[in-house]
Picture 1 (cartoon, rainbow, N blue to C red):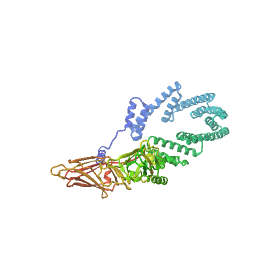
Picture 2 (picture 1 turned 90 degrees about the vertical axis):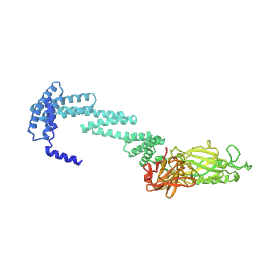
Picture 3 (picture 1 turned 180 degrees about the horizontal axis):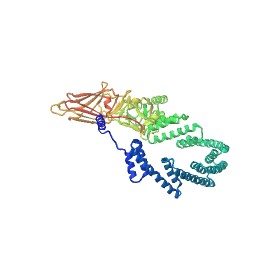
Picture 4 (picture 1 turned 180 degrees about the vertical axis):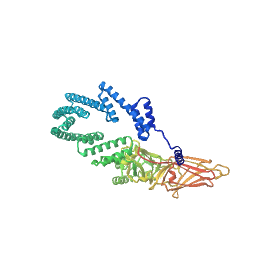
Length: 625
């Protein structure tokens, strides 16, 4: 860029940088075609640019003389066809070029007087037609055209008649407003006030009329605002927030009560939030509800409750205990062991069948059920295993326990809200040596869990499950995806003894697939066979992932569905690629990567010998749907 600037300066130094005067060129072209007005304007601009150019000055003077002559001829032609506006326009142009042109000044004076008379004639016609406001506009235009005393006198007469007519019409409208519906009366008084104001501006003696109408309008507006406000309150009470917003807005436009404007914004914001919820746009819904809260009108906590329900946030969901029927549904056959004669009263279980919200009340009921369940003989108590399928596809299991009533203490953290339709799938199994037996399987929407308002009836799909106790509460955001007192059931793809877990500052990533290449330079295989690659990932010295073994191949690929890493940018991960053999396991290569590298979506490690490992990640952002 600097070289171009230097070259330009050098060229200007040699040629004096003479650039054409385009305005002069436009003037020459206009003069050639006889368009002297355009030529005059162009030459004037050219002279302004080159004031010392005598040739241009001469061209401008010639064009000016020709333009004046053209304008005078045009004015005459316009006068002959009675186009007074055209006459005035052309003569004004002449006088702008030749202020001392007596003929032009005289002709313009005559034309403007005639224009003024035409305006007054129209004003009189409008007065006769009962349109005083329009008549006054033409009176003002007549005065703008001419200051002739005769014109001024006639204008004053018509103005007085128009003002009197406006005041008379205003009084008539004031009288007609009486007895009308409030909204209609208000519109009539607005028209009356406009007429009275027009009359008062021309004659101050009509000020009393304007004041009377204004006072009446204030009173009617107050009553109408009260009516609209009452209707808006009723709409608000019936949760018709859109209608309430419209009515409050109408009331605010005719009232000085600032609370009406706040209430209008309050109702409109709730309506907008409800629409956003219907569209599953929970971020927008939360903003709208919070805007409603900010108005200060949320005295009944309608908006704040909606904001809390809509806002996507991390919840801790805890399953406290679970109870099943003492025997298989519809029979007296116990889940395990021989039939027993002694019957146990299970009325307590039947009384609380279904879901229960935990806490002190749930704990008390759980204690009562535990006492009832203790009456089942030990030999008739099944071993239960509870599994949870999370919305992200992971399956986790609680510790196996014996009894028809088992405490779980299982916790999981998920981003959700009260409208979340994603489900948590619950499997209850009776663990047996001969093969596990399905006690019951059901789904429950996350929205019902986190709102603690469960509507799902499990008995139609899982009649053996009598009651489940759970509790939920908001939690720290970084815990999203974590579990406690639950073991992963993902050994089909992850053989590691531990799992990556959430900590403050970490984000959640899904490891979706891996591909490794084992070169012969790094691993020659065993006795001529191909290697059996396996990938291991360590975080904080803990092995959090170990793949299945790819048999007899130098190119191992893994498609993963439920493997997650929680990583902060500075977290360090160590990877080992091994050749696994029943007799001996050999390290092919190892490498490290950081949490910051995961954010790119792909992490690749390579060796000089040609081996490599490529891992693909997605940033897992859970949330309600």
